[in-house]
Length: 527
Image 1: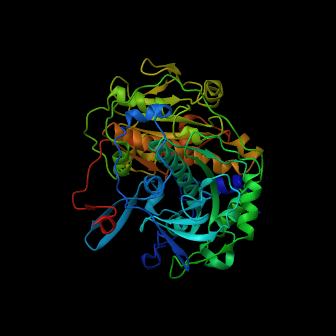
Image 2: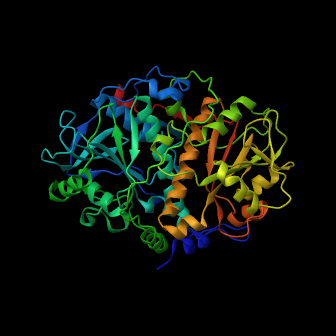
């Protein structure tokens, strides 16, 4: 059996070779990005596209916001803002959807389920969300189980959707997408004055049982779903009695009637990436005590963005190109982004249960008041010494005046280095800055192999913060999954697996391709 460490080493890109992937893309067999189940009752949701007046700046003070009523209007808005469509794009005869939650290659391996125990909302049961149609499919009907008005959201991944394009490295990207989706759900809940709790005590087996994705006969053999995470939605301030809820939920799911069979996502499968199933087994999450950790709020750098949060979430895009001739990013916008990724008690960290294990190394190109160079933002004060000892001995570690705890390591023009390290992509050098997310890897993975996934989730969560903060600053961000792993480590002086780069990100002024049309997300549903 392959270990997660073996998988990680095997799927590193290097300057000499890329990780194993398809030799060519079979466009006729591109997986359907939208799963549907035949034989399920459809639960309609109210029309999408509703805007709320709450601004991005006001979201910082979520604790003072009133909780919206629990009804189908608001549940529909929650699902839309977290996982729904943001727009359609069209170029010639080609047309594709963009979503509120980003995905590597816009392939969207994630599937979303709603577990409803609130009889006043709709019949109790397990529902599958179909974002393109903005409705729910009822997969399982509960018979008035004693669920204390539980409302849960679960996520799973169809690994094949990513592997079709990215081959063996696809498992990494599925985990990043799960982290992005977790943050997207937290932000969407906050818009309604709600909050989420990541139910980290549930095992993968529990989640698969509850969501019905372990019912293999109802899925195409090579298009099954792997469990990711499960969250409880707190939709009011009333105390929730969760004692015995897990047992009740699992017993109810096991004893209830299920409906529907998944449609095929592909015509056929040219490649068989067995290594993904091997690492998926090696990284299974066992049952355990729920982790509970919450940082206190640090000094907040206030946002001046008055754009409605609903509009900002829907306009989030991944930049394809940056204007390399643009002026510098303002220092206030930059320091807001630094502050936003530090752990605190505001969204999306209210849905995160562990101390920070991911830190940022930035390649700064054009930021007001900062010299170009390599910088480091440790995300906990306790990690500074370890980071310093792990990196090159001649790094300066000079704390900047721009932001407390933000260190200049090496002053230089690092645009070419950033581009080369990110698989020769100009988006890493034409931007205001790019960065590498360094995870505390070796000890975490040795302690619990499933923590490999958790580290990627944390990276994805940070990426979602940066996406939305970039939009709020009138610039744009892009996640970068392709980089030369050990070349990044060599530039930073990392010589073992205590720290590993798991995700790159870049922010700058976008260049729009005017040949591509942008069309409304749900025109046919709101006409």
